[in-house]
Picture 1 (cartoon, rainbow, N blue to C red):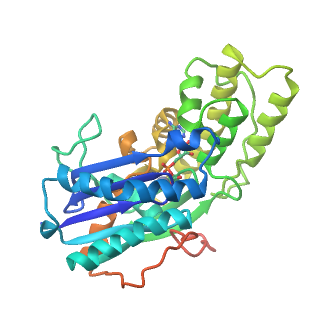
Picture 2 (picture 1 turned 45 degrees about the vertical axis):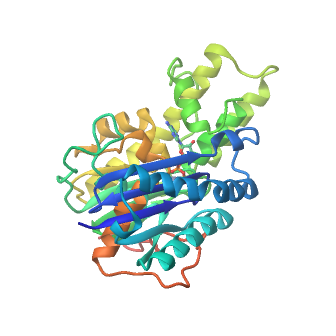
Picture 3 (picture 1 turned 60 degrees about the vertical axis):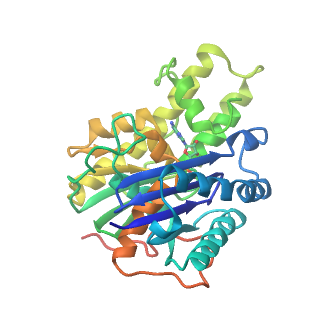
Length: 351
Ligand code: KG4
Ligand code: ZN
């Protein structure tokens, strides 16, 4: 049995988890800074790193306590080292190094985007949090992963564990970033994604016709035009939108984002003969994205429970397990890589 303590501090969640054999969640502790950043309408980097410093040790201690384990029961310490905010990543990386050095444990540096994909290998109960049931053993390569978070929007083929092929990504804003910016334009609380989803429930998705950037037949995305279109509408009103109008704006905006994401994911899955679509990252918590992609794809569409879609350390532990059994180890010079990518090169030719 391999037990890994995983640490995640790339953005505004301080998180630690203990994961067994890359699948079983023994503990999964998340301290969110959402309230701290809400008054600024976004993540305030200096405040984020200070909050991580305050939370990191209690969060790690809680994760160990809830797993009923001592440090001697661990096989490795893993930590997200990119991409993310440098000052935030540093807190997690330094904590992980200190623990690994002090407890003579191997250290692993994990890519946050790859970790979002590995949330799919975690065991979960239908309610999402715990671990008793069998892990999803029905995942067979190749898989199509749509990684949609606050900082990233990427469509990748996963041919095997840790083997990715880049199909496309956003040319400007990330999908989650678009939700957050439009949420702010609509006067909704931060983060915009969940707030827009809730507001959209009472709205008509066809009330406003927002632009869709299809970008010919590429697998790239662009959301900045959508944000500008929303700005124009809101500016044309004398009062901030409210009630039914607000709900219609939220629903129509959400439908535009979901339309492009789900259509491109479904088309890529077909073109590259994927066995399933994996929706990954914070935006994959979006109910409209889940149902629309499932309607459009001719193969199964999987999504983690919402708590494992947004940032957490359990996914980091699941990902670290694959690298651990492949013999990978980080040196004490492990550095933060704020601009780390999942796949370095763009596809140039079609298969
Ligand atoms: O993966 P994540 O927690 O952090 C990053 O790695 O960025 O993603 C956060 C993003 C935010 O932009 C948030 O608005 C979005 O995920 N998000 C959602 C929903 N829940 C979170 N977007 C749309 N619908 C949701 N239900
Ligand atoms: Zn994330």
